Length: 156
Image 1: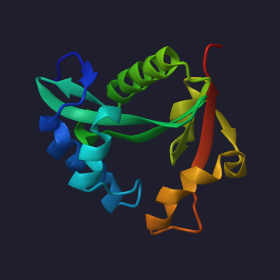
Image 2: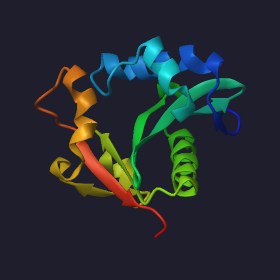
Image 3: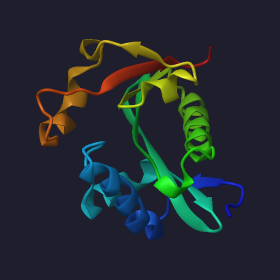
Image 4: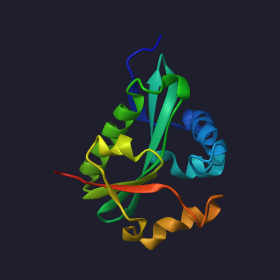
């Protein structure tokens, strides 16, 4: 049984749950793993979704440039997938991006269809700024990235 999802900004006590969520998918090659150090450095970027008071999903918003943000580490515990938890996380993140004044956000994903439901469009990865590739050198699939880039214009 699941309760209604509660979305909130991450706190220090969420670091173990974020690490567990992200690294579960990283073990399957679906995202890059995160160390505790990386999580603590980026903690203010993260949102959490809870069910019955427990974190069951996370997502982060990284500001890339004055008008561009990146959606990162969108992960929902497999037992809670297909129940709208990723949707509420993404909606909250898009509201935050808009309130910050970002004009567009992108994600690199293996599930572009999910993002397309929210108005994202597939784009060539070559259209993204070179600085986003700094994290890619740690990926086991580098330089043969098979993720799909998706972009959403905000305020439309």
